[in-house]
Image 1 (tube, rainbow, N blue to C red):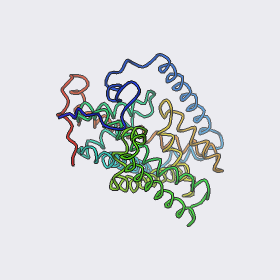
Image 2 (image 1 turned 90 degrees about the vertical axis):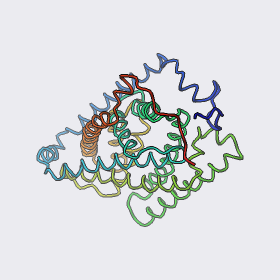
Image 3 (image 1 turned 180 degrees about the vertical axis):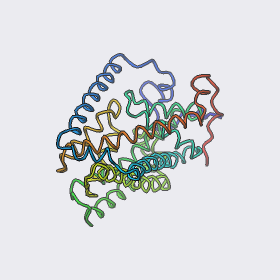
Image 4 (image 1 turned 180 degrees about the horizontal axis):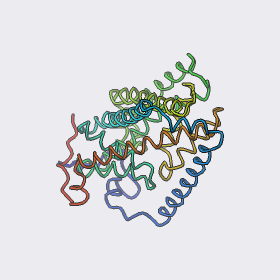
Length: 340
């Protein structure tokens, strides 16, 4: 049964965020125009990345790409599939204080959302929310709290990791010490702030309900471990893609590019298309890596992710019977029952 009581941390000037989300008035024309402009800019940036990648200086790399051994391509594909699965596990771990969902279902939804992240209007995020709302009966206020907690915990790992990489420029003992210490401090602070929200209601409001998740050490620790594994997998993608085009990429450069790839995947204003690829290429230049080389490596990774996530998304949509939910209008599952 739905709990009629309003939860702390989920209020907006117009009322509860649940009411705001569940009674949308439609996207304003200005917002639509901005998203379309963003899409056009993203396409322009992607064209620029293609120009960089297919530069004459990359001829040997392009020849290596065309003649890449099957095992290297399969290795890159395996890393992409594993990364999608790990992210799905992360989403389920963060949701546990609010609700339990079948792990396979969350992984499949993550594959669908990953495929749609290239599009504007944050379609990947919206699709994730709508599937879990329509199919699993999650209330929008729960979804908002879940996603806010996921974003906050992601930053608690990525900010120290990126700062350590920019500071040291190599994976020495100072990098490991500063990165892990920073991650530990940020996550402990998150737990402390989550628990302090009971005494300071402003924290609950600002957190959008994330305080109900981050106050629990288990999801915080679980997310932190899985996020580090995920960054390792993305770094391995860059090393493997470099190997495919016959280039050697040092681990510290791979970590820097992987951090940029992740942050741009989350923060791109109108879909990741173009913004992520150009941003990673710019990060490579900042880190002293050849621009055309980074552009080609990033395009290989983005293409692999798009193709594999697309195949998984189609199979996942059939597995979840999304046609019953979005086409035939089948009713949602029963009300939400958070576990103790």
